[in-house]
Structures are given as structure tokens and as C-alpha cells.
Image (cartoon, rainbow, N blue to C red; front, side, top):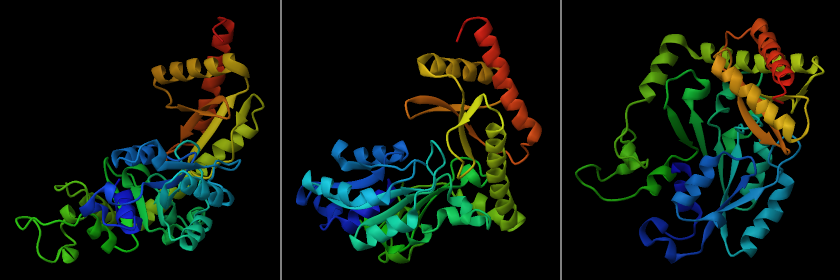
Length: 330
């Protein structure tokens, strides 16, 4: 929300903060079909409604297709909307896919659009020399959201909104309140009331600062690399198990797969199996609906997960499937 408010103030073409929405055109942003639901929520909070969001098709790896951006931009304008930006993902929540950020940045620069990247989950990949190329182009974004409670081992909630040009954040919430703000708010780097929706915020950044000072960046670099490595190992094991199907090769530490059972009965089987595993407390799996099928979704976020755990997960699923089929529950 904070990033899109900054985008709105920067690209709307009128001073919406002071004059209100009625002073100019109806606005919108372009987002991937696989964008996190928080983008749609932010758009609606800002009062743009359903037409404040125009979805861009994805490729076979669930990445935003930059070739589709010109057509979607034209559709938005034909609908009477003024597009102000594009939201990329690094990575998507459902499958952990990294959008082609450099290509999106090129498009935004050509069309004078704000480029925001939702890097809440996958932004920490920049710390890993082995995998940082996945987020190539992240540095070209106008704003980035980064959740340190996801891939930096921090307690929740610890989220940062990063701006390429920090002055944009001050412009967003410009107002007078002499009992809180000095005459030169652009110099009050220590005062988040000038730059965020909340006026009072806890000093959560101290937790990250302390961890970095005590442990150094190397711990986090190794953690991210390890989690991504484990996800790739799980994908390899699934490839070697013919009764399982892998949705796609993982980009990040998220692996989507399913037991090979087709149709509605197969989807129901997956949900029953997942529910039984969750109730047992052995493993934690979520589910996601992709390409008209239910898929099991595993996020590898514990660096101590080893080969035995990965093999044990698949064997547990096999046992649950057998039990369901023997009782006729599938």
C-alpha cells in the first residue's frame, strides 16, 4: 500500500494527496495474473475498485509475460484508465516464480511507469551469489517490498519498503503537523511518520540490524542458498518417483507437486491426504489450484531439512494415499 501510494503521487499527473481523486483521471496498475492478493487489496483500499487492476498473462512458468504488457496497457487506456505502474514479483507466492524484472523495467522506462516489485518472499535471494541472478533487474525498481520475517529468519512482522529515490516517500505523505514534524521533513530520516501509513511504528529494524551486526551477512547468504538447494533436491526426488508429478522446476524454495490421480476425485484425494498429514503434525503442506488441478505446495524454509525428511515426506504421502484408496475414500 505504501509503495502504490508513492507511485500514485509520482505518476498520477495531478496532486491527488491534496486535491483528491476527482481532480484527475481514474488510475490503475498492471500486475501479473499470479500477483499476491495484497496488491488487489491495496488497490481497493485506495478506492480504485476492480478496474484499478489490469492483469497481465503469465508464461508456462507462471512468470509475467513482458510481451503481453503493450496489449494490456492499451486495454487499460481503452477502458478509460490512466496506468501509472507495473507490479512485478520476486517471487510469486503460489509457485515461487521470479518475473523477468529487467524486461519489465525496460517497459516501464519506455512508458514512464512506476516499477514496483513485490520481493516480500524472494528478495533475500540477492544475498546468495549462487541464485541472485533470479532477481536480476530488482535494482531498477522504483520501490521494493521485502519481508525479513520470511527469508531472513526474523520474527514477524518485519517488513521494509525500499525506494530507489527516497524523496518519493516523503512526497506521498506530505502534510503539516508542527507538533510532530519539523519544517524540513525530507531530512527527518528517523521519523517514519513522514513516510508511512502508520504514524507510530515499533523499531523492528533494530532486530535485523542486531542480527547482521552479530552474525554477519554470511549466515543469511548461506541460509537462502541452503533453502533453495533443498527445494531443488526435493524436485529431483519427485522426478525419480513416477507416482508423483512436479508442477515446474523450482525457482525459489517453493515446490508444487501432486500424486498422479486425475479429475475431481484426484483433487479430493489430495485435500484429504494433506488434511491427514497436517493433523498428524509430521509435515506442513499447503495447497494451490493451478491449471485446473489441486497441487500440494511445500515451502522449504528450515535449513536443517535433510534427505531423510524429504524422502519421509513422500513416503508419508504414499502411505496416506494407500490408506485412502483401501478404505474407498478416494
